Image (tube, rainbow, N blue to C red):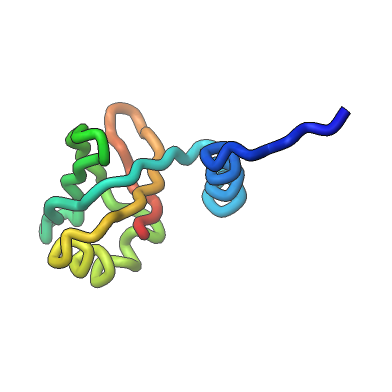
Length: 93
């Protein structure tokens, strides 16, 4: 029996797991602001949900890229993990 995989979300999920591990989730939206003190991000998802992320790991190496996204109001993908009650952005693109 052949299975057809044509679900884009399923394929994106596999790509995220390969790149970031199985514990990473994904949100798409716009970064509204970044704190210069602790590099935290205020983010609005495509559905309008407001989220706060602590920026760690690869996210910290992309601060100039993040600043450009804020300035241009560019669509942004945030890959994150939940640690206790905190959303931790591990990658931003």
